[in-house]
Amino acid sequence: NAGVTQTPKFRVLKTGQSMTLLCAQDMNHEYMYWYRQDPGMGLRLIHYSVGEGTTAKGEVPDGYNVSRLKKQNFLLGLESAAPSQTSVYFCASSSGLANTQYFGPGTRLTVL
Amino acid sequence: KQEVTQIPAALSVPEGENLVLNCSFTDSAIYNLQWFRQDPGKGLTSLLLIQSSQREQTSGRLNASLDKSSGRSTLYIAASQPGDSATYLCAVRSTDKLIFGTGTRLQVFP
Image (cartoon, rainbow over all chains, first blue to last red; front, side):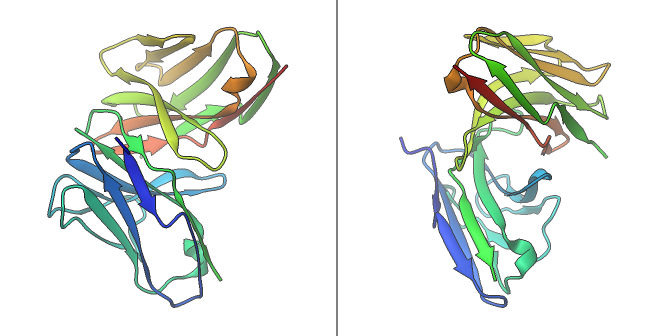
């Protein structure tokens, strides 16, 4: 049981470039989430999904898009990266809204 | 808007001490509260989850309490060990979202 995995672990982008972060979970969870963590600001929810084929906006969705084509995968896309998107990105999943969230190891993204 | 505050931001204690980490939230209408541990450069690991109807949860040397009416939770760590050194985050579930505090960075020295 790998739990929640994230690809890649590190990435450096130039302003304006695009990329996709992949999150995968093998726990058959319905709910998946993308957060960003910045110093002094805690974790903030970007987008989330309550099941395959669904997505919803979180607290800081601007500049990001997501897709949940398969239950086990949740993709986070940056269409035109900006330096303000330099952060550590965490994916999480849970079996229900009221249940424990399980986190991946994170992706450290730097936008120059 | 729900806001979660953790005090202190950092704490350094000698091994063996019992310690308390604090978490406060502004809106008492919550579904549950979770405590997480985060090691440097790693993801979050869930420690305890307290439903809004519960007053406390225990796991090993950890005990978390919840006082919804006053908007407070505490995480009690008994007989601290160097391996407990990490950042501890609390998160409150309001509606469909988890709102995180900024964490308490704990260092336990031998």
